[in-house]
Image 1 (cartoon, one colour):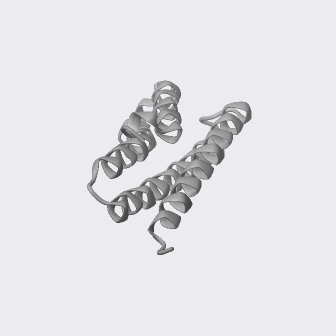
Image 2 (cartoon, helix red, strand yellow):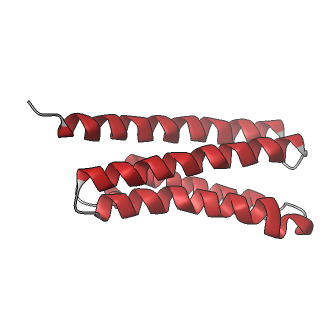
Length: 122
């Protein structure tokens, strides 16, 4: 790996940020400091923690930041469910986000597994 920009999980997270910003533009103004802000912050946190962890000098630190990214992903998923329950998202839009979250979650788990395996003594 050269940088975080080479990781598919980071690229997918950047795409997720763009979609979250796009969809939350249509949220009611009273949600600007509620769900809108929180969802945007979570989405940015995912990609940012992947990048920060990849830039660290140790695998242990990278793993730590990937766990934080995974936590932010779960938080975003929760906020998407709340948004759907409040009829702020259509079922189709929610399903698209749900699929993206599954993909990114799987990629994070795979990367974590790979990094943990590389730490095991032979």
